[in-house]
Image (tube, rainbow, N blue to C red; front, side, top):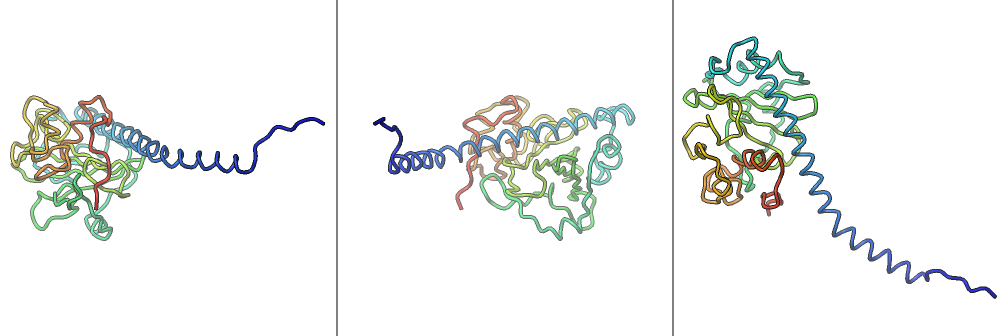
Length: 249
């Protein structure tokens, strides 16, 4: 009589249990890495789209150093950018107000900046203007104050979907007449409230928790504002020491 080789039911169940445990351990890591790759790809695409639009606009409207940097976000978009890129939607301040989207800083605290506010009473400055690119990313243009001599830019790589967090799916840039569009904190960024990290990029300062806008959850003021600079200077990648993990509630 021939012997039959196979697995017992107990052995099969044990094997399946081991596979299940390993999967539970590995899947979160895989998901996290996938999110990082997707985030970088979308951010880089949106950045390139805006840079190309600026270059094309310069061909027709003159060098950026001659552009009017005291226009509202809406005026800036319609005068210099709109004709040089493809987009799907524009959002009025009434629509944004109705959406009532909560946005947070890298440390989970409420974001109170004007770049994504969607409205401001009376004056030209403080009015952000948001439009949506074809890939679903949203871009905000904002004149925070005429004295800034430039336009704040916010890119949310997954539109209005959560987490809507600075440094996680939302990234800041600044357009100035002398340096064009730079990651926020770099050349051209207003030198007040600790926004500008100086002429020389220093990684240790960008991530230092005592710096006002550092890419660090313990930054004292605007945590995450400099995360864009960190990503770009790290070669368009989210490095191992990047504060990516979720904020504890």
